[in-house]
Image 1 (cartoon, helix red, strand yellow):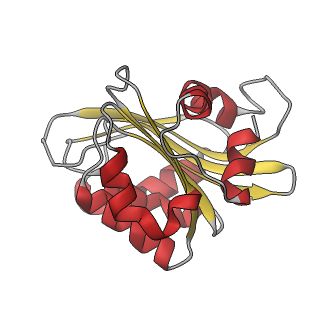
Image 2: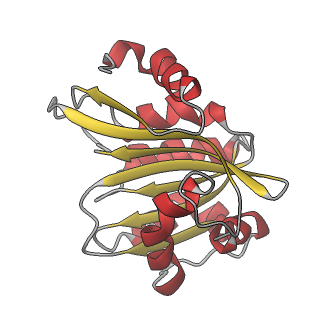
Length: 194
């Protein structure tokens, strides 16, 4: 499916909800930024949610959007992985909620992932998008994979635990090499949920 930039707020949630529990694929023209994706799908999980974001670089506009989500109490935590060390920029932008941020960097990060998770009993309700997470429009044709549904802990089946399968590599980096380590219970419960 091709999603026009003007319609992402309506079409992307509809596409994800029509395939609950199954991966869906879509394309855009590379003119939807990570902040716009956040706006389109963050309402699909219950607040306060934990956002997982893997991007080559994090810009000030995206950090300001994240800060706004924290101020509205929609967001309870942030798991962030970038290519280069941006620890000081993250600390400066999110200093008053830094206990809710787990951050690491790794030179292998070249593409993007955006996920929102909320704990519902012993399950994680999640929205996961993988593909180009742009901080600036580049108008290239981009392919994405998306998922919306629940994951059950302690299971290895891709059908039952897509959260674990989609986030395993990123979580390993956040566990072993954080330069900012979250202490807030909501964030640590999502990090340790695997």
